[in-house]
Length: 373
Ligand SMILES: Nc1nc2c(ncn2[C@@H]2O[C@H](COP(=O)(O)OP(=O)(O)OP(=O)(O)O)[C@@H](O)[C@H]2O)c(=O)[nH]1
Image 1: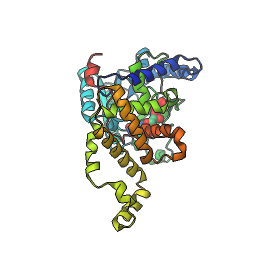
Image 2: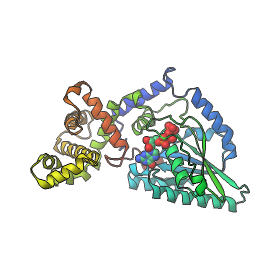
Image 3: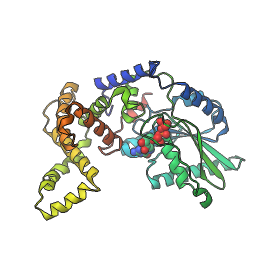
Image 4: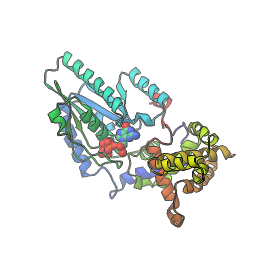
């Protein structure tokens, strides 16, 4: 995953996903996906651009394989590596170079960042101008946003629509396409205007997987990044896989200063100190979440640093993860009486912290692996 190593737990997760995809009661490729594929295939010959959205953490595994099945395809196809802030910056740069060397147009973006979306919009406008110079005669340019579930298609379409250069009257009637942390929530194609003079529209589409998934390692990456519904695998396994990756990476070393600097837990418990009381007010109100993240990082750093087992060995790391789960219960304030579900609650929070980028940057596949394909 983060390295070339394939963990046993990753294979278990991948196998569970493949099994679910073939279970007639669980299959996500149901009638709604078949209908969405039909609707996309009818409209795709009419659009000027395709924006293929991928997850920057898994730039290959999040490929939208179905794209090659549609015909005719517009000549302009852009690979958009979304959630760029969650990936390792150097790996992202290598990935963009990798696509460029193979004559793919690609662009990295964070759909939640206004400046980043503005720059992307400028890039799209330049592509529209190129299209017009090349003889595109229409007054309207249409781009279709495609991708597997949960890669951020709707979030990007919304951000482009909100930031786009459209008239004040139109700004008063802004639309929203559904953004959700659950995969598969976009059900229909929706058109959003992102520019005027000339008019530019994006068509947001439902996320689609191919009917059958085969590769367990790819499926594990899709599950960890949130493309597959969590209940198929269970958050416990996902959290353990993430900790496996974290424990065998160097990311945690960035948190060394958290232990060397003042211990926030101790300082917060010292009610008599005026400055501590001030800090406590700060963290107990608006910054509770920041404080928890700080503490989670500290606990992870300390448990890894104190570990004298083999960080290359899965069974050995498994023991470390057990210790981390126990230590995280306190930090994450999992109530004592919830012991039966305590690990589940810890797991759920760890998965959430990972997916929102608060536990560091992880690119789960590297250009060296891509180069083999
Ligand atoms: N960190 C981060 N999260 C993002 C970004 N873009 C989208 N998200 C989050 O990713 C999740 C999925 O976003 P959506 O826009 O609903 O994804 P989608 O591809 O339209 O999903 P489907 O409806 O399954 O096709 C949501 O929780 C978003 O807030 C991004 O650039 N960075």
